[in-house]
Length: 167
Image 1 (cartoon, rainbow, N blue to C red):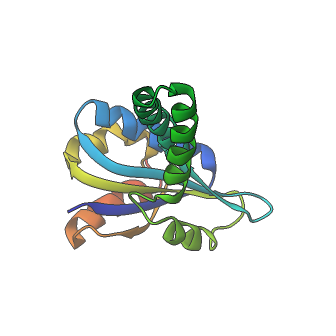
Image 2: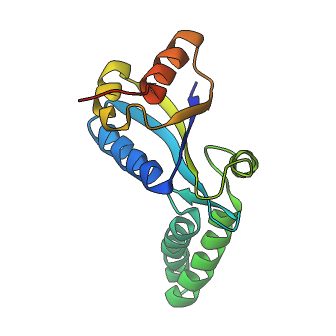
């Protein structure tokens, strides 16, 4: 079962940096992410989700490939590719994997303008090494919500919300 972690930051730059650092840690096999999304609220109050994977374009690419392949069977690969890309893009646009988009938008509605949060869905983690790798974010974030057990949540809160630390 995956664990959800929501961390808020006073600006969107820190949120995007955290997402990039988590991607590096995933490449090192220290964390297995199911989904990671940065949610921002601009100065006008508009909420935007920045997905790590664009499902619309991924669907279009996959649909284009399969459409071309099927089109080759019927001697019209270009028409098949076009129809497949369109169907794949629509399918990707309508699908929602990972964290529920409505949940993220509803939570982000409560942010102050200019703030951001990172929604992280974690399958597996080597906690001590990941916290070490995220030391640049120590004391810079606020844990809004988790599905972690009490001890792990308290450890994460102490790490991210710790004030007055010096290197």
